[in-house]
Image 1 (tube, rainbow, N blue to C red):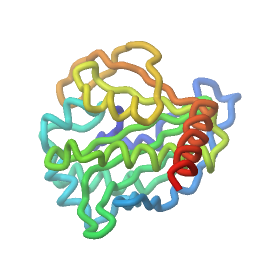
Image 2: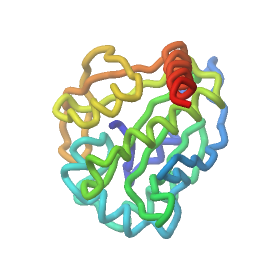
Image 3: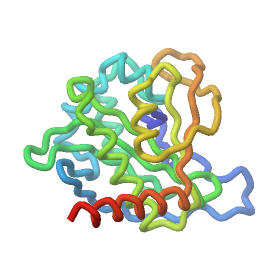
Image 4: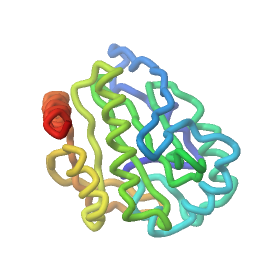
Length: 218
């Protein structure tokens, strides 16, 4: 889960290309997403306290690349403010309950340097683990991304010691690509992660299989 909460930096302001000759990725709309039990929408001021409480947890911070620890209300305020900037095609969502509006966590899509791929990130507050929330949110993000953007694939990374996140990606059709190292802000160290990818062809196949199954069940 490589989602960023860096209080000192806006991910949307980072360079999108290693060379000036390449075009910057287009900024896209980030529509509200509705699922059977969730609403994915932009984080807003009313979420600040909930984000600060849920994210101030080493079990979260040590699994996400750019969440500091401790994590205070000021960090949450900065996160909400900077996530409203959609430059470079980035979309940041609050994951909320469709009926009560309760905040469960956050997720994001960040445009790759080539402009033809996305990086997926997500985290769920510990009180809401093992409810299938992350998987439902990831499915919604993936479907929106492939339906609305001309991308080739979506990448995601999780720590090798995070089997729950690995299962979310596998259940969503992502396929293992290899291992690498990333920096974790909360522990000021590099850690081993597994890299997963879902390409458009595989997503189309998964959608077709799902539609076939629903048709047989009718």
